[in-house]
Image (cartoon, rainbow, N blue to C red):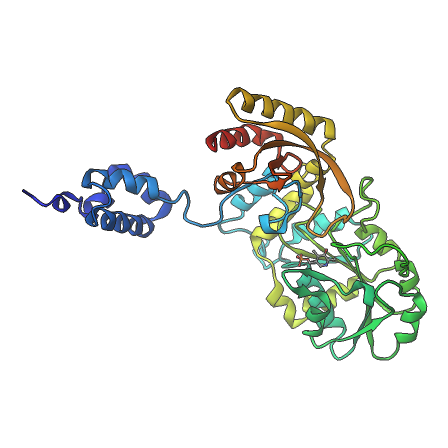
Length: 427
Ligand SMILES: *Cc1c(COP(=O)(O)O)cnc(C)c1O
């Protein structure tokens, strides 16, 4: 009797099998070989018969040569930091592909000379906020704040309200970030109340700038007061306004959210914002404001360590110049249309034997934006035990009253069929 292990296909034969050639083209020979070796080991251990080695390899191959996988965001949180914040528009996605190879990101094709890096994206921001004398882009809003501190407050003081000592997430705090630049922090006022006099008393020779941070991920209510930006800018020192979510102008549905144009009109010397929150673009930190200050930031040695790549410039420009971003679309989708979609999805699921119902929910902007602003939404509700299976299939919902809630607010209508298909597979 021959040992069945002798019938296990050899590594080279497997790797050269035409059935694996699409995978080799997509994943590379090394990745495919890693899977082949693991499956051969299982066959040698007698866990699978030799004939099943090739099918098992095909079943175990990863879908793509990277571990980040796309998910459907059924959490009802539009800007979800753990899910990558803003999803890019199709125009921005195309821009990433177009910019992936050699590009003229820092080159003038008409003269053959070096050109200003990312000039098109910078112009798009200036066009969106004409009040800005100049603009600069760094890796994220935290980097934007850090650069302000390095360039404008080295060995000087950053004066800010105790009520605005914000933690931005994952244990990172704005004050500690600023202090690590070598700037000294001068906290004024109290957690709930700070007056313009508190600021005035703290200003002097040592002041680098006054920082106004938008308390974007929490809300203090009750006996509170904090000076308006305009009152601070009248104190005669530069004011840097961290607006967080990055609206360019006022948004009718988000009246408490600060915006860059209004902050500059109120006299802010510089405004900093994230590119991947309400702007709906790639991760970036935008700095807008007085031209001489922006120039000072851009020429500071640390700026080079915060430089964004061509992909960010490409996606940012396409986000600003192209059609509406998915974040804006999600924000303005009316409740009635979400409800209609939820009903359609739920009734299809019911026909397939899934215990699915429709529920009205409250979705939120998220990502440190518009805390306390609920957005009426609609969701498909399926049994609680679907939740982990759905998550493994790439659908992230939430558990509520012992049901899995799949909120449609952050799911584009074009993904409804995909959502239905994935729920059915979890039956
Ligand atoms: C989100 C946020 C930050 C951090 O921005 P990143 O782009 O994530 O670095 C800083 N300040 C405020 C007010 C924010 O909302």
